[in-house]
Image (cartoon, rainbow, N blue to C red; front, top):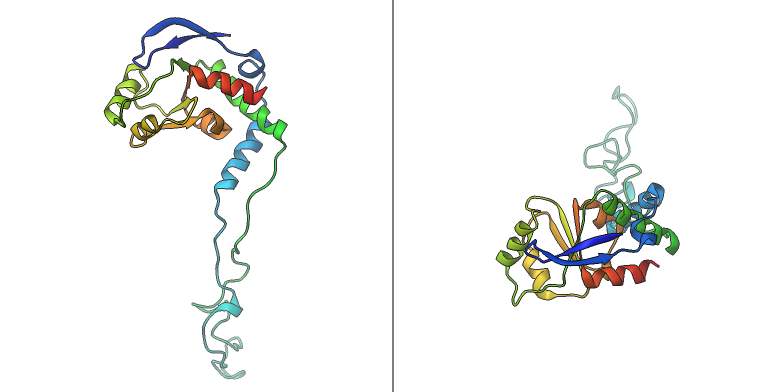
Length: 208
């Protein structure tokens, strides 16, 4: 599979990159994608939710009314769940949402996500680029030159570049990550995937 290499201005460089068919040309596995995305989203959860149960409520333990003769149900404490301000029954408790997935399955999921992008022609290859300084204007100019303005875009660079990262941080619907941080969720969440030339080799080495 050959794809033309573009400049960050959108012009064709005249060169092409050959993508590995074992990664970008496989039959996507939807279930592997589902599990990997599910794990990614679960790992984002802090799990710090908490509600107070009856024993944790601050309140008097005196009997609030006599046992009999009121015509209503008996009640022994204001902390009872049936009263406003009382404890909550079976409320949320702090917990860890992380779960394990096999490495081979995660690799298959990432291959499948990349294969979908290649199959739908939503994959572009850019020659390696950088900015002299963090400039949102330069980053916006690049996005406009590639006709991706308004589209949800993921740009994958080979190595961490502070200037590129800071330039795109303040623009809506765009994200910059390094090849080592590539994940299934970000790939599928973007309408267009842009890979720098140096990132292609890194991704292929990671997923082989």
